[in-house]
Image 1: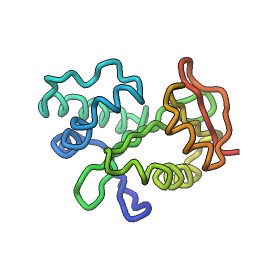
Image 2: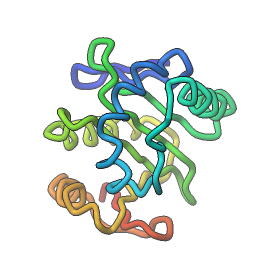
Image 3: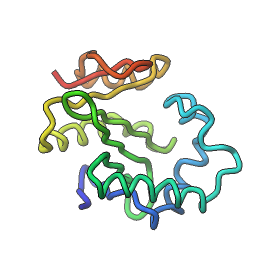
Image 4: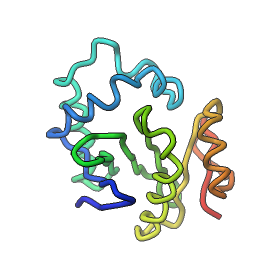
Length: 159
């Protein structure tokens, strides 16, 4: 179920990864809240135990084939996550990386989009919050074009 891409590995996000996942997102939670519109999640008193429950939910969706959440592992260190969720004619791709990987976001996105071409989706969109100007510049530089997406997002897709 894991896939090697660009020197790092995507592996299904599951409860056993709660500690490494927590160590990745909790220090950059302020940036992620703002960029991704997480509306205050995670709360400042969020714990690894609470993360186990969240990852159990994600893994349940994965097993039921409702949505697919992957941890991005560099060696055994979590450096972000990828979320593949249903969209009208295919899927929407959300992702985040730790602060030290911001310079690698474009490479990650490009690799994941190429990988998703092997999936049976008619279309894969990348929805971004309108104020996520840093990421909007990156997707435009990759040649992605604007398209219809979920309300509250500016979406992009491969032409």
